[in-house]
Length: 393
Ligand code: NIG
Image (tube, rainbow, N blue to C red; front, top):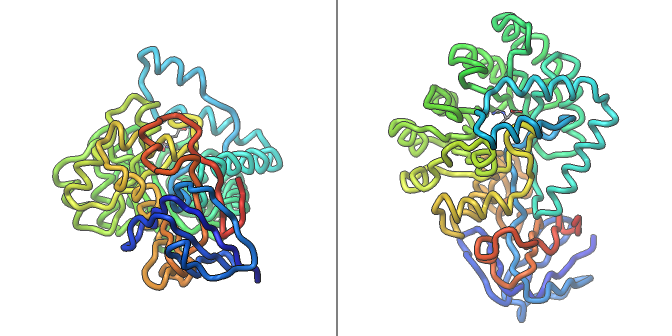
């Protein structure tokens, strides 16, 4: 085991009760943080990395992506920028491209997308199936995702494939497809929205997933008010994602629950939807996560820097709140947050925080202060990314 001292950290945002430390250092051993404190008091280590006075924060925890796809929907996007509307039906275009891609190509595409996310400071990733929409393609997507990311979600209930009967398709998702995919995933998700799955269908999908021991997540309230949030809260979902259109009752329910409200700012901009009411959610006491929602239809970016910047500039979060939402919030949405001694509820090194016992996942900025994320929007702010103590970008 080799220990590494990361020293000369100008501003260390721990995203923990220790807050922000200046002139700080971290020691990591075997992928885990073993010491944090003033650089002048740091213990010796086998090797040292001088971070040159940079600001350091936990690696981003991107808790909502759709990485397993081929093709793009640039024409659909361009038409939307000329006044068109987003509709769920576009998912079928990506389904066709994904089904015909082949496993090897999809694997390469996902590897490239993970590398791009790492280059932007992301160290923990969730991704979903949902562009296969038949048993073999969904299983393949889950297997590929499992080779590249930390958490995999089954989203067979993304769209009823063109030509299929909705009832029969839900039967398939809850039966044969779930049986085939469940061994490769930890979560089930449903796109509970007009044009996708209604409340009863969503309920069936969630119950089938729960019966298999999967955690629950829901795509909800993206295109209008609807039952997504209440379903998610009632089923104790780890997160409900999108949350653009919320009633007061939705906000209150989220604030009184353990369900994270995941906002997807890049998606809101790319679909020209009203930005999710993150300020209102935080003020009410809900836990908010920020995620990229990387996918070819509504959010073709994995840039968490961009999403966090947008949350500050346009959704009125403070820098502290936005950084917390992109790190700790994502960790809670994946149930990987610190529940004590830097460990998550399964005893793994926690993510989204920098404390002793947690994963040594570091996002090193090019500047001495993290406010540059929002103050200098769009500038290349990430200098380096360390995953479990090893530099990956
Ligand atoms: O999270 N909203 C549903 N699913 C994706 C978009 C899917 C698509 O249009 O390809 C999302 O935005």
